[in-house]
Image (cartoon, rainbow, N blue to C red; front, side, top):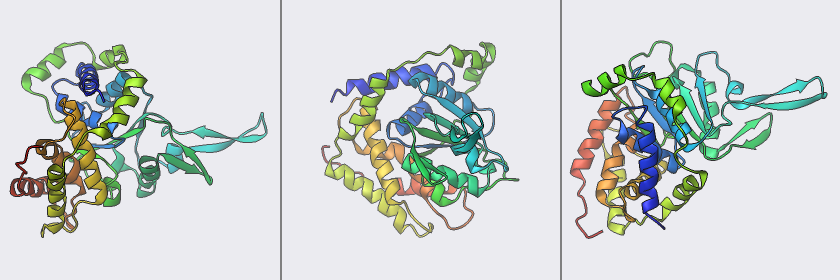
Length: 314
């Protein structure tokens, strides 16, 4: 395994996307981490911070197909998966593919659709397949869903159930740029023009390599024990109705491996686990009440402080 291929891949993708989304390199790297791990992203932020442009730039950079779906209360599951329609010329039913048949899918304002439509994403996200009229069709790889929702407005929305939020690999937020960064964006040419001018920065072979080889990053027993200590601490926390699931623990393991590879190491250190833990675990913590996402972050922050970090040579 050539670890330099991971660092080169990260630099190419992050550098290309940074031309569009200024000053958000860490978030772009986390989206890339989800992509390598075959995970999905829940991006929660106020409107106008560049969520759509981020994914458009990301899709062009990796050379993948991109589809955007605006979720509304009248959106039907068939609007996502596709339908069988009768072709009068041939006299037969044909399948018309929906927007889920793409490499990168943006589910914009996912919490505005009904639970029925939201649940139609579950099979595609977890099983990489959809079922229409009893026929199961595999989705093409790579495949990643990035769903967005506005944390400030709740009128006319349908909050995501915990069973669905657990399907997302990470929960991220772009946030506002600094004053200097925003001034540079205001005075430059149109962001859409920059996106359209982007070219593919990595080859399909490079993408296949990093998505296949990151699993060979070594995780020593002390670091694995530290990871499990964090997961078990969330399950023992009295203020939480439920801790992190096994799916969440596996996501944390994979994210730490990719983080180590991006740092140019063939092994994971505790700092890798600690860095990605808030992004991977916070949305998987169930309070059983109306506690906010920030409340979950505080609980996890305290757990990260309390759990002892292994000092052995890893």
